[in-house]
Image (cartoon, rainbow, N blue to C red; front, side, top):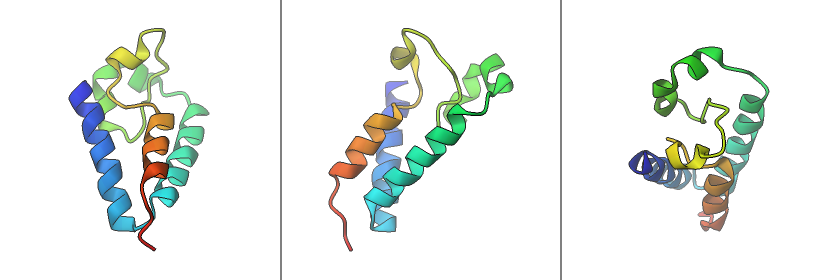
Length: 88
């Protein structure tokens, strides 16, 4: 699961390089996260093994969520993107 999280950060970095604007990608992640929190996904909750195929973690999780999460927290992803320099 840690490998999946590190790949997620690498995908964010690569996407930011392609776009040339890591702040725009960070803003998009925040919008997706806000939208995803408003829509329950009972199918994903019933089949948590599909979580790694989603752009955002679809599971509501619990106390040990971060330990077993296939996705890093959106806040961590956004912080790393905001720390990247813009190319424009």
